[in-house]
Structure formats: structure tokens, C-alpha cells
Length: 332
Image (tube, rainbow, N blue to C red; front, side, top):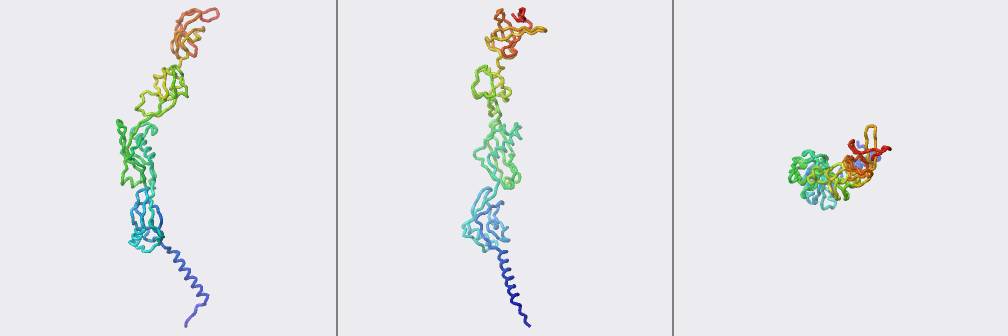
């Protein structure tokens, strides 16, 4: 006995069958070639070139470009590689080639200079990286490492000749297989530097040094006298012992205490003793800084005495000064 399905059931079956066919089409999209792609490994896989390549996607088919560079693969080579690996039909989308870029992390020349400076401080015992001036040789170029090699570069097997100021070494970045496989050497010149106090404008002999009269400049240490002044505080308040030119690096011998008493300047003479303090006006016969002994003339008595400069326009006479006092207690 033959049974006939109701019309509604047949219609429902057709809907189900059509839906299954559509689902099959959705589940199996047509493979299509890419216009461009970026790879992180040193090989290009079929899936890097063709979308929806299925099981063949993981098969390596070409060498990747060098780190940080790009290249192209022509369509006919992609077709041949796909057929060789069981993928005979895919949409080339009318493309003539695929652009391949090798992902990389760039390490700049500035980063390499920093790494050399750190190696100099570490291996040569210098004060800090700011005390090192680096000049890389012209053949040294920025380099690329794998994107996941994120640590800072360092210089290993570092060598430095202090006579020629030449250095060389090899770049190391933890996690970079490329650098382990092909070590990169860097070389150049390394100069130790330091900040020194220099004169900003010409100063005459005896002129006091003010904050605006000096600058801190970084210079090669080997070119500067060993006793050159490095601290601003050692200069401010001093005076020029001799005429100084702009740009001159200062040494202690270039400076002196400023004169508190000028030659032929009227000064106050103080004589102090237990229970006695006498003053008089006098004329300094020589200039002097604090602590200097100068000759002073008492204009009234015409007597000459030796006194010590103790302040601006002030000198103090010792116990042996040939002085007499009038009724008011002033020195004559």
C-alpha cells in the first residue's frame, strides 16, 4: 500500500532541503586570493595568500621577505603552489600579484646609540649615559627584529680603545631569533664628556662674576684641564683675577675673591680691643679682598698702618697699630 505525503509536508520538505543547500553554501565559501597580507614568520603559508583555503591554509609555500620589508608573489606562482597542495580552484579576483609584508619592530639609530652609552657606563665605569657622546659609523643602519621581541637592545662583547676612542660590539635583543641567527655589529667613536662652567661674556679684571655671566656647557673631558670648574656655586660671588674672554672654560686660578676695598678708596678703620672700640677714616693705598692685608693712610696724622680687610670699605687694625685716641674716642 502506497502512502502519499500531504502537500503541506512536501512543501515543508522542500523548504528544509533548500535551507540545507543554502547552509552548505554558507559553510563552504569560495576560496579567494588576497591582494595583500602581513606575515610574522619567516615563511608564507597558503592561508596567508588565499582566504578560506581550508586544511591547506597551514602549509608553508614561500620564504617571507626580510624583517620590516615587503615583496610580491605573482598570481601564476600562487596558482601553482595551491594546485601542488590540493587546492585547484579558487578565485584570483583578477589580481596579478599578492603584496607580502613581513611584520617587524624597528630599532632606530638613536636606540642603538643609547645601548652603546649604557654599555660604556656598565663596562667602563663612567658616571652616566649623559656623560657619553656617541657617533656611529656610516655603515651602521637601523635594524628590525621580530614584533614580539619588545625588550630594549643591548650591546654585548663591547670593546673600547681609549687612545683612538673607537668602540665596537654586537646588538642583542632578548627573544630575537633573527639577531641570534645573523648577529649585527655596531661600531663608531665614543667620547667621554662633562659639563663645565664657561664665561658668557668678556669680563675685566676684578669684575665680579654674576649668575648671568656664566653658562654650563658640555665638552669632551679630554680637551678640558683637569682642574676646570664644574660647579656654578664655586664661581658666583667670585671676581675675575685677569681679563676673561667669552666662551672660556673657568679654572680656579682665573678667579679670586672680589675686592671689598679699592685703591685710594676712603675706608673706615676699626681698632677693637677688650673694652675699647675706636674708629677713624683712612685711605687705602691698595685694593684688597676679604682677609687681605692692605696699607692704610690716616690723612690727619699722616701715619701709615697695616690693616685687614673685613668688609666693604672696612678694615680692622691689629693691637700693634700706632694709633692714639682723642677725647671723643676716635683714632688719630
